[in-house]
Amino acid sequence: MPAILFLLFFATPADLTAEFARIASDAHGHTGAAALLIETGETASFHGADRFPMQSVYKFPIAMAVLHDVDRGLLRLDQTVKVAKAEMVPPALHSPIRDRHPAGANLTLRELLRYAVSESDGTASDVLLRLAGGGERVTQYLHDLGIRGIMIATTEMEMSRDTAVQYRNWAQPGEMVALLRAFHEGRGLEPASRMLLHDLMVHTSTGPNRLKALLPPGTIVAHKTGTSGTNGGLTPATNDVGIITLPDGRHAAVAVFVSDSPAGVAVRERVIARIARKAWDHWVN
Image 1 (cartoon, one colour):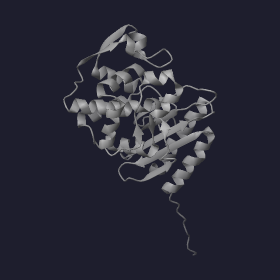
Image 2: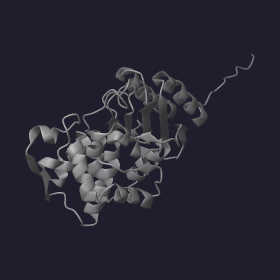
Image 3: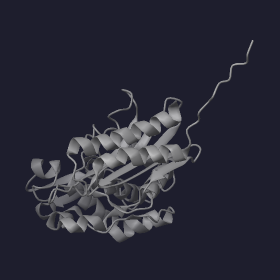
């Protein structure tokens, strides 16, 4: 009886990178993506060292820096923080705090973190950045973690005044997944702070059509989105970064930045969702 030969194909990181590039072409802009299997270090990236405007993705490292100060006893989760009327971001930006408390508010630090991360509130983000000591200090915190490819330089308020300013807050996709790995592994945060931020990211209300959209129902995704307005037919930022829990308990860190794209929002978000699904299929199947 003749022998039966079976040809087995094992996808490589290079194959996954090629898939990222193919999917990214639909956005007709500047797209970067990186995916990292945290437990093994296997990585695939497309334009992973390029710089992309973060928009609200930067609320994730800002929250990490604030919680690091909580861990050091410089801040307390239950302390009350005054949010002045002058700190409310303008109506063009998303801010549930401003909408609910237009004259100002007194909120706990824990509430500000929830607003900034889970609801992507611009006012909360600026207040947290103030409490953390500003962009330079948050960027130094990232440097201390070994993350050099993320820059935090401006506030939401400053970005609202000039669309070009958003490009000053940038990230490299490869460095963003490295930060996600550091966060998952507990570097830079005590366990309680890491668990709190992870929970806030799991319960984020933005971006249901991005990283999560094509993953199986019930998949745990701790993520942070970022979105700009559209200017002159181009959208500078449609982003989502996060940690996806795989069925076997391993974790994939995925970061997708779609920049300067003329495509509609549905196309941009579909690019992010398809890239996340390709990473899932690569490490699950």
